[in-house]
Amino acid sequence: MKQAGFFGAAGLVALAGYFWFADADQSAPQITGDTASGTALAEVILPATLSEQAQMGKLAYDAQCASCHGVNAVGQAGVAPPLVHIIYEPNHHGDESFQRAVGQGVQAHHWPFGNMPPVAGLTRADVAMIVAYVRDLQRANGIY
Image 1 (tube, rainbow, N blue to C red):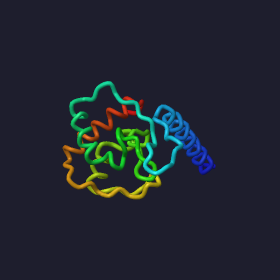
Image 2 (cartoon, helix red, strand yellow):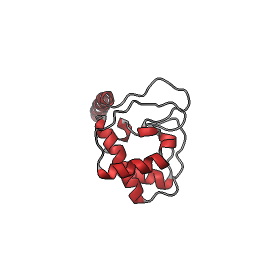
Image 3 (tube, rainbow, N blue to C red):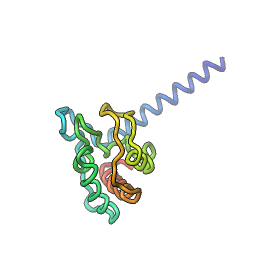
Image 4 (tube, rainbow, N blue to C red):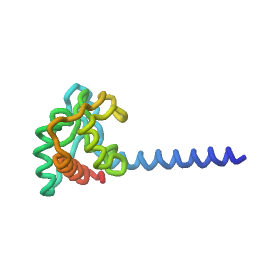
């Protein structure tokens, strides 16, 4: 009898999680249906202004990240995911996740793009500014 109660409670938690994430995804930029390699995967609303740190982060992002993750973090079909997506909100991928991804690379676990290699030439301070830029973009798009 205790086992049935446990499984019932676990089922309710899973169902609640599904609805919470389903609702959250509706406010996030939607992945576009175009799958031609290199095309943008999301439509991103740009913020009216960027914080000072995000302005510097945009420069670093454009130089080091945009070739894979796309201009303004929209992602690119067949290349890399959009960073302006609910998956990358701070409660799921905190700032340190970005630091580790850049410094050590990361194995694919949310998207079918393959593994991300480490990115050479960026300091922790550079990545912090890039994260500030991504977070400003996320806020402008209802994430965060």
